[in-house]
Length: 394
View (cartoon, rainbow, N blue to C red):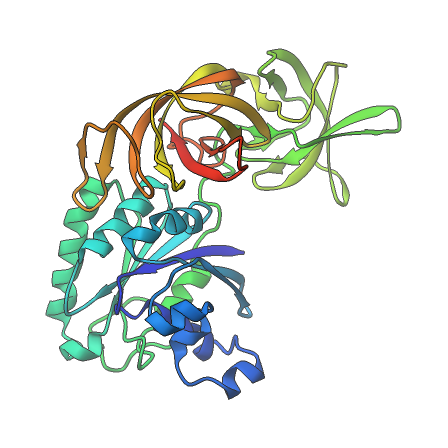
């Protein structure tokens, strides 16, 4: 299964592109096709979205082709809904960013690209849309590509694919376009069908956040989903934050014992030694274990209506572990359209900045650049239980 986040500026045709993709891929139910007047309405599910002609919330759309299954995360483009895009893109394997061939990169396009880079989305596909309105000109497509690559260099983006499309007419969406013979690449659907999922997850350091302890047949099975890396019987492991060491005796999955397990597989682990392991602990291969710490430096996207200020306290949830956290300092605020940083005393709704956190318990976190799964956390307001921040460990 491939998780695909989509983003585009107002009137760039994002909802139309998704509608065209679903329609031409024959991924619609009969009743959806019968009442279809506007392709964009397939994903603009809220009444306010249809009335205003914009995307507000993240819409999740499941569909499948004979080759693979997909989950589309349709993300809003407006600056005031930055937190929604952060939510939708944070778990994506690939991001599709739309750019209007006539306008090139807009402020919103730059924001979408910067957020995709910040969130570590491993694959970026840029659909240069509305090619029909520029006469399907290769020169105009090349100009947009150069413009995007210049911005991408500063935003930390790599593995970028460019596809010229017309969502309205279906050019290069599911089928190759006869109007652009100069384009030698794949149409969008074929590109998505061939894209790798969970890029690099299995190659990272072995991390198993423990979700549950199961006692069966005199054994203790530590259950969880591998966040990254690969585990095998015989591997020396360390349990964090306690630091206790042992070796993997057995790995089991839904169909029995396993010779090895790779992220993102759900498994249970039996250890050779009787040691104290519980929910919230992290099992890591001893040779590549993270250092447990009571302090974090991180990039924080603020999701709460009340601004974040130094001295405030929250609950911090990292994988299966929750600890109290104090916002020690706000170092700066990032302008995602210019990539410039400036000093800040607070972070308001949708703002992104670098912060320092002091924790009430030790946390075994990785840098986000090393592992998205174990380098991410959320902050929770203890009074309301609202999620008010999404963080990436530096």
